[in-house]
Image 1: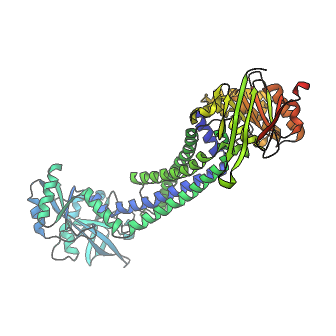
Image 2: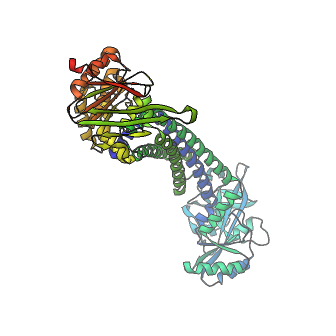
Image 3: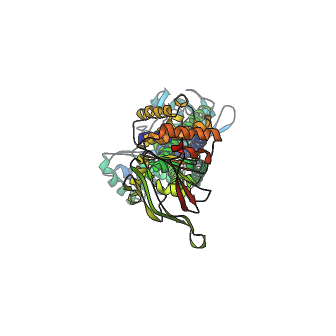
Length: 378
Length: 234
């Protein structure tokens, strides 16, 4: 069988025009599908940036909260109640809100402010410059050095500005794993300073971060929190909730799905049509093979091999092209939200398998039906 | 005469349905022998190609039997029939049906590859058959770079590569000029026909009748007679 597959390979690859058209079709489709889903994955990752960066295992919130940015403040007794729940090792408050920074140039810049528990500073980022304990000094803020950092005028330790009409001083430059979705800089400070500087409602706790004593305690914590009328989610569940929100309640997921389907149809059309033409052009040759003594299974194997080889080559090229494009885009646009994750690759692979299968079926139907007698008749 | 190669008995073939139903081959019976160059001759539409297809195992007759070297071929299951064609029959099609994307050598090696022979071994053996047809030095060229006569020779090399007992030529001179066609058939007669092989050749080209051992004349799907060819006279 290896010899006949080699023949099939040569028939396909030596027809350079068709082979190139097939590769272009599949590569283009995979490129589009991967790029679209990678962008979506990047957006979802950035949307969960605070969850990833803070790193708490369990998050307590109002059940109506869909994203970190849309937190609903909870009363302080929730923190006390959580702390007194069996299975909780420790629990701290987290503030998440938005503020306006007035730069020295006189322009305003919106920022995200994360207020960390005053006692423990749990969930703090890694400090690149300055000391963590300097966050306790007067008017202290740490700024995250990410793609949005230049929007604050590339501040240094000691840089001063106004934040909601309060004096603020940069005491640290920090690094985080994932930058935010909304294209605005992130500042870290203490919880109490955050609620002091930023106008809040009667309640001030955006989230309660919980460290359970063990993994087995999480269900019990969830039940107790639910009894209070709130919701406790593991970080993975919270990320899923955020993803679900963006997928199904913003239209973003539908748009990405539509683009992915369109890419799939484009790829299928180009490669299906080209492969069908290839089969049609070689139909008499397949008929001759059948007359010579090729069994149906041999012809099916040849066509399946041709379709699979072309599809996998196109898949590899498409993934490579998408990765290269994202890499180049990120060099130019550091905040470009695209990440190729395992599920992108699996989805694109599944689509390519479907394209290969449909193209093969069209070809196989045609070849199986050809009567060698027609070859004699000319 | 050597052993019996082909025995066709009461072959009939109908095509179509209703009023369009056509009786293409009518009650044909004949025998061909190993070592014989047997021509089937007749005007266009006389049923030659249909008969050839039934004898070679690619078109099932409506009635009648075909026995090749004692094997009733139309009693074989589909896969065994395919194996039978691969091992016992060699085809030289009118339009050659060579693969333009393969080299001449690879084209000649196709039956060997289909027999699951190791690739390099198949190429080595196919090179020998290209040598037989005088095209060893053209082995790496694609068929489109060859003349019509050379392509015909590649098709012959491919047909004999599986060492078949029966070789089938469908209008071998139809796509060639008179001299080339004649030279090809003469070459086949002298180099390809052996005591252990029967060559069945469909033609209406009287210029190559001189190489026939026997000529079966067909008209309107019926055998009009079997004559001795002029080969013995030469």
